[in-house]
Image 1 (cartoon, rainbow, N blue to C red):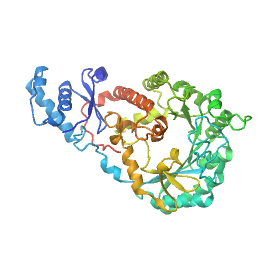
Image 2: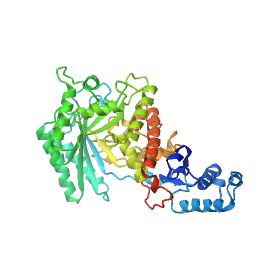
Image 3: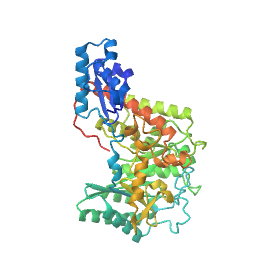
Image 4: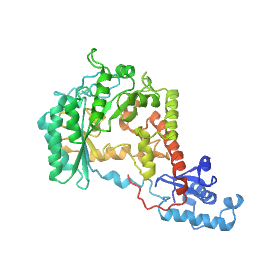
Length: 475
C-alpha cells in the first residue's frame, strides 16, 4: 500500500467538535474530519507505508497511546471504508494520472495576430510583440494565414469537446482589428458547421478600444482582459507608451470604463513587481481605474532583476493575500478564487495550465508552439499549420511538465492543487531550466492553499465528517 495523506493537527480547533483531526488525501483531493483514533490509524499507515496491513486489527502504538481494542477495530474499519470509496487512495503506481500523459486533446488556439505593440513595457516577455524573432518578416498575421490557422485548429480539435476557445493575442492584437472581425465570423461559421460552441478572448493594452469595438466584442461574447499595473505612476513607469505624449494609464482605464458601459465584467491583469508588492493596494488601484475583476500575476524575471520581489516583499504579499482569504474578499482576486474552487470541487491537475495538452499557440507566420509565451523559441516549436503537429514532441513535453515528474513538485502535498506553476516563468527565473519550480510561486501557492483549507473548514465543518463522495477527481 502507498498513501499520500497530510494531517493538520493545528486545525483541530476549527472542526465541528473542536477535537477531531483534519486530514487531506493528496491523490483524491479529499478534505476530511475524522475522529482521533482513525487519525492514529492513518498516521500509522503513513509511517509504515508498504508494510501496513489493513486487515490487521491491532497496533502496539495505539495500545500504548491508550486506545482499547474495540476503538482500534472501529478505526481500522473506518479507514478501510475510506479506501473502498476512493476517498483515501491506495496507489502503488506512483502517478495516478500517468495514462493521461499519452493523450492530446486540443480545444483552444491562441493566435499571435499582431507581433508588434505601441508600448515599451520594461518587463515584456514578448519584446514588444516580436519575441526577439529574427525570422519574423511580417509583424501582422495576414488573412490567408489566419483562416488557415482556424481551419487547422478545427481539423485537429477534440471532437468530444462541447466548446472551443479562440484567443487573439500579441503584441497588441487590436492593431489587427480587421483580422479579429474576420476570424471571429469565420470561427463561428466553422463551429456552427460541426454543432460546437466557440468562445473568444483578447488580451489588450486598451489603447485602441472604442465604442465600436466594445459593441462588436459584446455581440460576439468576446472576453477582453486589459493589462493594468496599478496606479497611474506605477503603470506608466512599467508600461510606457512609445510616444512620450501618450498616457498609457489613461488609455487602459478608459478601455475598462468603455467595457463597463456595455458589460458587467471588466477584467484587468496586473504584473506584480517590487514597485507595488501589496496585493490589496493593487486590487484597489485597478478597481479605481474601472475594473470589476482583478488578475494578479508575479513578474517573470531573473532573481537579480530590480523588479523581482525580494523574499521580504514576497512574504508580505503572501500574508496580505492570506488576510484577503480570511476576510472573505474572494470575489475579485482571480488567483485565490481558482484555488478555492479547486478545493471545493476536488479538482486536481498535474499541470498549471494547458501547456502541451489542450492549447496551441500560432504565430503570425503560422508556426505552432506549445505556449504563447515561448513563441519564437525553437525548443518549444511543435509544428506549423501547413505540415501539422509533431505529436511525439508534444507528448514528450506534456510528460515532462507533469508535477509527478518534476523535482521539488512530486513530493509536495499541494502539487495537484497548484499544478506546479507556469513553465515559462521557470525558464526565465532559473535561466532556462524549464522543468524545475519557481521559488516565489511555490512559496506563495503553498501558503495560500493552506489558508484556503482553513477557510474551507470554517465554512463547511458541520458537513465534513466522514462524507462518502462519489465525485470523481479530474485531471
